[in-house]
Image (cartoon, rainbow over all chains, first blue to last red; front, side):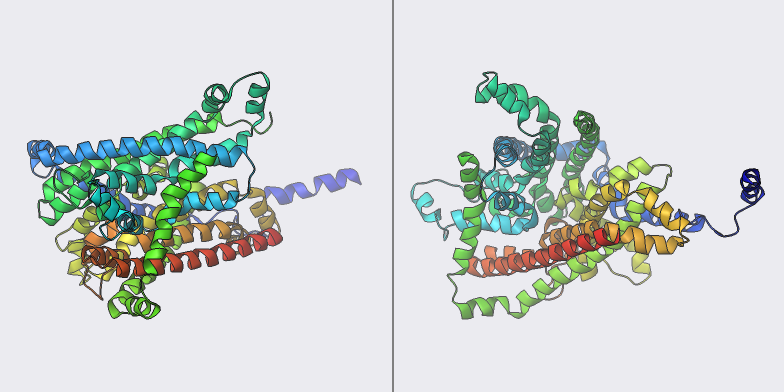
Length: 298
Length: 262
């Protein structure tokens, strides 16, 4: 009896199974090809072509013209202002991003959900509106504008407003990156350090910081890319004073509107290069973060 | 901690409160006049309408892209995976001039399209194209981790029970992905509504035809009509928040439904 039941299915399995005509765990070859074809075409048309075009246009009058466009005093001033702005706003957001993430991940308090929503706010608001709020605050008709003007302090249409608007727009990057990371790690290690006699600052530098360093770097990287490339918010508050309050993206716009296309694309190519470097660094960091993540079974 | 709260309120809350205080300077009838003026209504309609349409395109295209990236193996897959993030990383002004040059009459894509009688740059279609560009990463990046984590055993079980591939996709896979798809859609939509840099170059910016709401805010500001600018901003903010709120509710509903189905 038992021998008969085990031997009968064998010839059936050897033949192609008649019930399932097609393997329904994946798509037919044709569909697969069509989907891959669509995905590649879509990404090529909408993403690869614009990117290639930036560099093609930038070098369309040769390397020498490209270099003289970048060595123009206005271009150099814009590059310098962009670097200064990025350093200050990334620095500010580094400090306060860590502080905000620390407060949210390691403590329980009322209004925590509200705070998290607040951190995300600059992401969901139009950059133009972000710029507008600073015009309302510091403008001649604004809330503190008249007082500032009376005391000879220039914020709007000057570098301070550019830095403030950039800081506002890039605020979420560091904090958002750190909150899940710090929540995952919990506060046991910090508690252990403190019970062994470490002071608050020591605990942070020796225990917390090593745990979050890759996530922190990741946040800073994205924050920096956005800070250097921000256009809408900065455009509203800058006043477009040539050589003084023009960042690189603003100079790209001005040159483009003056039909100095190649010069415009030359500046744009630097920003595109920044984006590419950021993406490559991001890919490398992602693998580092994956490695550094505590395993679920230990 | 006190420091954090102070910083947050200084940097975020006060400016936003200022927005509403400034609008309050207008009387209600003035506010309604500003917001319902022909030009404002058109600008809002263009921003929200085209953003919605572009987010829909991103939803469909994003799903197909994510499917190809996660489920299939083909040469260059990793590079294309990285390329998806470019619209997010590329400064908007750069994207704006690049798309405009690409789709202009003599552009690489503009010329063949012009031969077909399709004009993209300096028309509402151009705004649509720029909004699609800017929204690509959102659906892909929100759906990707969910699709990777999706248990293949569920599909195999469905296949064993005699389901066709189409049935498996529509009854098993899509319901599990729906919450992520909706999140991606909402993010792409919100980004496109507020988008300024990549849109203004290609838009043509004709009042009532191809003028987006953020640009109208900038124009009103340059005319020193601050209260008008603020009124438009407030309408945009409130409308965006309502739509995001509704999508969040829809997402939660889809999540519960996916759980009960799966």
